[in-house]
Image (cartoon, rainbow, N blue to C red; front, side, top):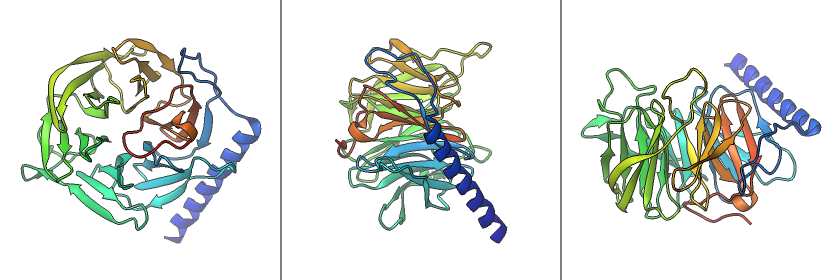
Length: 322
């Protein structure tokens, strides 16, 4: 135990030192800007030395939360401090959480890859299960989510880290209503992963990891979808065939930012490809945050990065910090 604590302290110190060195040297990565979107400046490294980062979520006020799946931790970082700070451990163990998002009550809603959708009280860190099974079987390994204005949660349940055989047999998308009812709203996916709503919440987008075609549904009412169809197709690296994306976010104009092997692939609301924003490591997930909600925060394997933009991210719940 003492040895592990020592190693954790050393790793934390190295992350702080690396962050300070990057700030001092003004380390950044150039990228060809997309008109009206950016980047408007260099890519910054916030912290490094993690195992596999996921689930960035900004609370709209101060903190960015994110997960390190193998380390079984949720981290918190002060995104508005004028003094450089290192991320701190917010919750450990964290139920092997992946995707995160704040709801309208200020709770941190999380997809636990142990087969649960959970809510975490920010003040007390108390964990409350929201959905743990469907038709008397646990979920495979809940992955990513989006909270709608009614308080319902759309979440994906692929097979990554799932026990064998898969408890749900299928890889699917679910909806947990604000009153606690959970239903399956779509299956027949090749590893459904990232999920997001349009700003007006009339569309639900799902990006699979094992298929380059992103799917969109019409949202007829909270948790009721129809007209499943292809929305866009991700560009592939040389030699790679039909691989999909991971996470995604959306701006106030409805432009989608999808993490992929090539970086952040950006599409407009009609499915037209606008360009790709380069990231130093292959990104796993992305969200908007910071002052004006105009900074992209990217979890990319071992590092947490930031990219300033002229676009502004859409907030599904809560306010935008001005």
